[in-house]
Structures are given as structure tokens and as C-alpha cells.
Figure 1 (cartoon, one colour):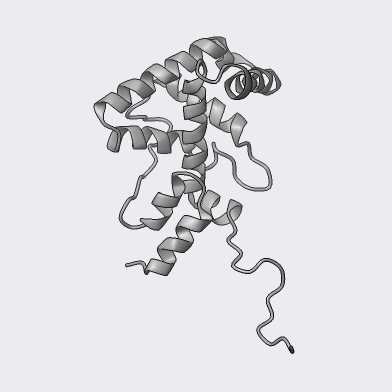
Figure 2 (cartoon, rainbow, N blue to C red):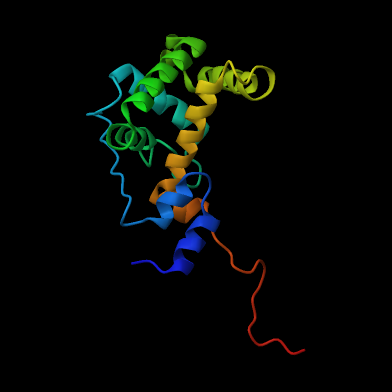
Amino acid sequence: MKTRREILQGMIVSIGGSSLLAACEGVARITPSPNDSPQFYNPRELALVTKISDLIIPRTDTPGATDVNVSGFLDSLMTEWANADTQQSHHRAIGVIGDQLGWTFLELDRRSAEGELTSLDALAYTERPREYSAYRSLKGLITQAYFASEAGKLLEQEWVAVPGRWDPSVEI
């Protein structure tokens, strides 16, 4: 059982909805679905979510969204936790995003896909946010799923209690 201090540290360190998952470790556990057998997404939806996730959080010196199976996490989240209304809404949102990007987006090379997603992102966050709320919602879910992963929690979010050097024996 976690202490109150450990729960608060988890909430401080976390970003977005991952704070709740970090604080409830052992209580709230979502096991990502394997990408070869999704339970919620159909194959086209899974491919779209995977490609968008990989472009939003690519592999750098730390694992990317594909490496930590963000799409599998979201698949399990929708299967195990979402109610029927949320599931239907999420399916519709994925369809809307596919239509906005064009389903040929799945066939684009990385550079072209990045360009298309950058354009969609600009529209979603500057010009017409309501029209692109489905994308904004998915992007939020992707980042929350990434930061709920072990790599996201341990490698990306370093909690520093005291910034800079800490020396317990400083002369005054």
C-alpha cells in the first residue's frame, strides 16, 4: 500500500491523466493489448492511432509511443474502462480524424505524414479548434497513455525535489 506522500509525489510528477494512474499503481492497472490482436479498434483504426502516436511521440534517445505500445494501451483502456457512450464517441472521433487526414495518410512515408499531421495540428490548436476537437482529444489520450507507461514515468518525468545541487551540510 502506498503512503500519502508517495501518492502526492506521483501526482506532482505526472502529466495529465497519468497522475491518477501513477498514484493508483497496483489498484488501477491497464495491460496494453498486443498490436496483432486489438479488442476495441478495427485494423484500420489501430493503424491510424499507431501512426499518429508514433509521429506525436517518436523514438529519440528514449522510447517512443510505438515502443511502449500506446495504441495497445488505448485499445485496452477503451475495452476495459470506457462505457458504451465513450466507446461509440471514440470510434466516431477516430473516423473523423481519418477523414480529416484522408485515409491515404496510412500509406504516406514518414516525412509526408509528418507534414499532414503538422497541418492538422495547426488547424486544431489555432484556427478551428472546435472542428478538430476529435484530434485534440486523441492527442491528449496519446500523451496520457505514454506518460502512464514505465518508460514515460521513469525516463521522461524525472522528479527533482530540490532543483540544483543538494548539500545537507552547508555552513551558514
